Image (cartoon, rainbow, N blue to C red):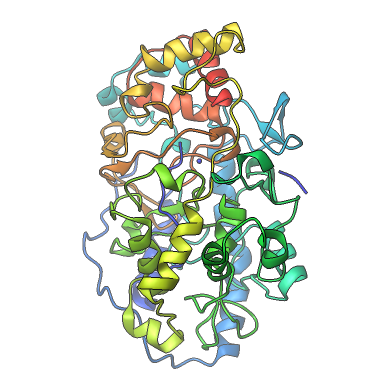
Length: 482
């Protein structure tokens, strides 16, 4: 056992491989793509938004070819991560996640650009100066998928191992692996808190909920309707990379994936993929599976789609995102069309029971109780609501305003192609709640920020708040108390 302000979609699952012509184009451009100052000339439109339906290669040929390329693919991604971050395992000595055993990682892990002596010195520069001099930290740029031209769902090894042990499915991909070190990911299996039974605390009993055990764990806690919704959330259905067709990315024909393969125990395990609603491939965003805790207080679903209900999103995922938004591919691989009035509604009803972890230092208004909080936490709260400008978007008691904002990060850097990912302007993104944020690393919609300290440095630069070192430390301390 071991142990995101994340912006992503709810139950966002699945992505498709790219057509061979575009894949070749992207690989050809990657040789010099990591230079932080290099502008890219990739076209703004792809050759086609449609995927190949008739596969002319045999499965053995596809598997052999892609497995052979896997070491090079992962070496390229590992080199990018090491260029951007300090990846050492340095847990906080006194702060643990809400499971009360797994520590969180601490410290700024994004590396400063060459020629800059400190984060204070960088924050003193204007956005234009940072862009024109190529000083935007690489770790603040969009993070590519482990193999961005290919894309698709990728699971951490601890998830793969436990699912295989419990229900026999193998979520291993023969063409690539998960990329971020496991010590940056949430505690696993994560606790489960229910809005209807806060008296029970963590109802997971330290287990990963799967089709193998969900009934014995929740019968008598959930009503029959909610229990059936949970059943569907842990039932495997065909998906782009995990299915029975020859263009799958699993060794054996597969029953598919479940919603909770990414959103482990209704939280997250850090699983990643590409968002399904952007084209061409270079502009598609990596998405880290966000926590489903607190779905009941959210009013927008999807990092940019802004769907208006969790029912809409649940149905969208099964019909479209599992297959990269391609209905022909969905039919070919085995689409599971859910019945809106019962199945979709039941799944949504269970998701809306998932609660945030307890925050014993917060009062009924979502702010710190001065009788319980430390001086550093109170100082951090003052920074959060004033100089730090955090509360402009993240308002109590759940620390979200239920809308979207464009941070305009692209004003700090020139567009460039990095391991197949174009760093163009990303637009408005949903404001996710910050309650329980210490349990949800890595942060931002694509997981580019590994720690809360990284996140504070990112927003201090982007929002131009000019926080002092002491103010940044206090702000991190406050965020840990939410």
